[in-house]
Length: 375
Ligand SMILES: [Zn+2]
Ligand SMILES: [Zn+2]
Image (spheres, rainbow, N blue to C red):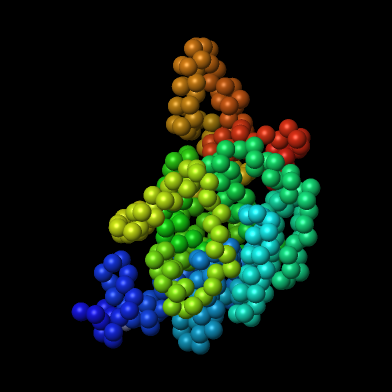
């Protein structure tokens, strides 16, 4: 009754409130989930350069450990990749930010890996270069202030959405600079479920497969999520039994906003209905995205519809606006009205990015929006 469900030795780890494992079988199982995810998708060529994005948090700590284990193996389970480790600064208070980056350098060096670091404000630059390994980027206060001004003009929910797009863009950018055609990012089951629900709520429903599936192929640099079948409970246990210490224990999404509410909802759901979370994510992964050639959004690189292919959310907003304003010509002139309310919609931006754009105030700097559009 108290034995591991795999090998019958005494068990000491309980998952999903009912499944008992011994330490060895638990570790094997996590390593297997990680490698199976990569193997099953057969995307990577042997010894491919892969940019590994590390935030320093719990999932990033486990990802680092799983990669070290995988490439150190000497059997048929060996992970045949050449990892290039990368961290993006600028998501936290300056003092925390430096502490985390330095702790992460130490963490990587402990595994005999090197770390490249970039700063999120470099998003506003056209050409930025890679810093020397294991060094913090030089602070560019003018650029950091510009970027922060842009962020502070947006609502918290839009800002978080924008930041996730900036992250993605920067990862792709640095992957290219470091000659990587692939990226591993560390989202686990719970994170992906939160992202899925957030996407649906803010009008990114058509982008769900890119943002939640195993592979995001919007860019020629592919983003893969090899931790997508691992739950938060498993992450906690893995950290504990391997005595790993994450470089960062600070969550960066604390404000009361849509993303936080959804995250809390998913956390509660995971406690009691974990199978629901897996089912939701698996279903999202199966939703196919038509690979027809069409325009891409400049900010998130998703396909944008043709003019004839009007988005229902947009039409609804137009309709309700015209009713509330009480001007009939608005409906007849809805195309122009839409473009005033949703700048660059269906031209350079998708619905949600356009909405985000309309919130940005770049009056302090004339060119910020242009910079984004010309990226
Ligand atoms: Zn066992
Ligand atoms: Zn977009």
